[in-house]
Image (cartoon, rainbow, N blue to C red; front, top):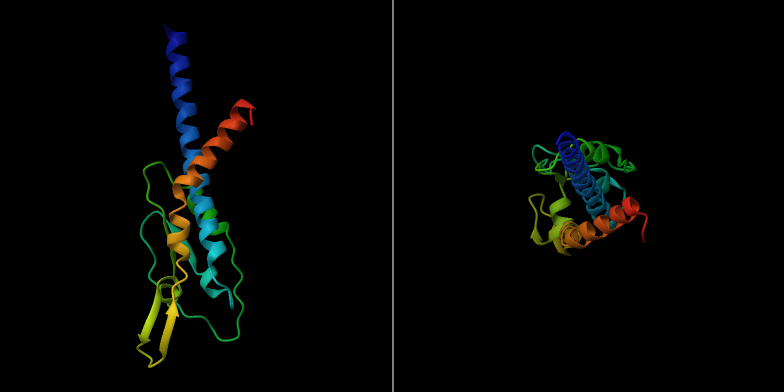
Length: 149
């Protein structure tokens, strides 16, 4: 009986580890899709991405004029690596203009600037790919585990 119990325990451990791997890799890829769709001028919008398990960040930061902002994906990777099954991951942009770029804006803003800007929908377009990304990750991890294509 002890051998059977240890086999079941090991199977459960491997199943949990595989589920976590699918969750983390899928989250990483969705964020990669999102970031790949972000329009880049100075890089501030792209570099303003923050990933958290507690809450989305407010879109309240503005860039400094004439500055380039490289994106470093390490912080997102670290946040995803620390997430557990059942956690919510919030990937949000702190750039004050992020909502305008993502959703679009027609009208005059609080500073008197007039816009007629279509949304780029980089968040929604990436998120709608979640089911396909999860399927791809599952297939790839299963292929690695079994050695079959």
